Image 1 (cartoon, one colour):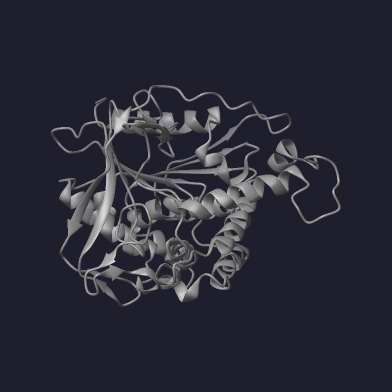
Image 2 (cartoon, one colour):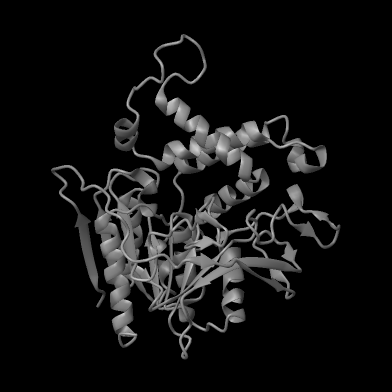
Length: 399
């Protein structure tokens, strides 16, 4: 029989508790690594990557049995830099540093944590900014479209390289949670637990629409040049700015926007199209910052991978059948104000797993932060994840 539990954090009738500081310590200075693969990787689009590199980082120590490894999968604009900071750059802190480290929910005193940068990204793994060995020039717009399944296949090869036959857990939030779900289906014998956080079994039409509007902002930017903007000596900053602004709106809840910005003006009404409201200034700042460091071709490809993910497509829309190959235990976490990946979508995953007699725990956290809540220090959320990893450690004999 399946095991099912549901947890709700906070008091639904009152204010949510203030975020608490992360427990534990930092993993400290970390070093990014790269590994090259010369075995061709067939992609879902029909093309093949003959050679490719993956950037990754590791934290903690792999035990003698190689049984304490946890893979962390990143979301849209993140990378392999999950925790700690780079030597000489203490401000460059990993995107999930509040989650991963000694004494933190994913405790690196107990677990060996692997963070990997996905193919098609712009942070070290083979992607549009790297050189195509066939031409000696950056891939640019010629880099193939990749899928969540392609990423998971590449991650499995990284696990082989590291000598990890089976992960104690694979976890991620948002698009990272989709990868954890894909791992459970695609490599059921190589994963003991899947932590699927703030995710969905596929994108709704509304979510695909948001991604398409963001892509059109980039594709119609005069500086895009069909994706060959590097050769033209330009960068589609305007398109990237707008794409980031659109995305950022979907990451925050209406409640959080109202609390942080409301209708507050910067300096009173100016009767112009310059940013007058604080929310306008905030979005423009986020867009400007993003446009400086992110790659437009990468953004197009990663949002498409997000759109394409739908394990039930191969089973006529039957999610229960799509998840039938999974054998691991699951923790599924959703946040009440996340309207981009709503709790109802997480409950679809839970129901399909229960229907398959799989062991699943479900936590629905009352939090005001919207989709971004999976990155923040909500005490109930961190406690749920910590308790789940404590259970994994107990199953491994307390190591």
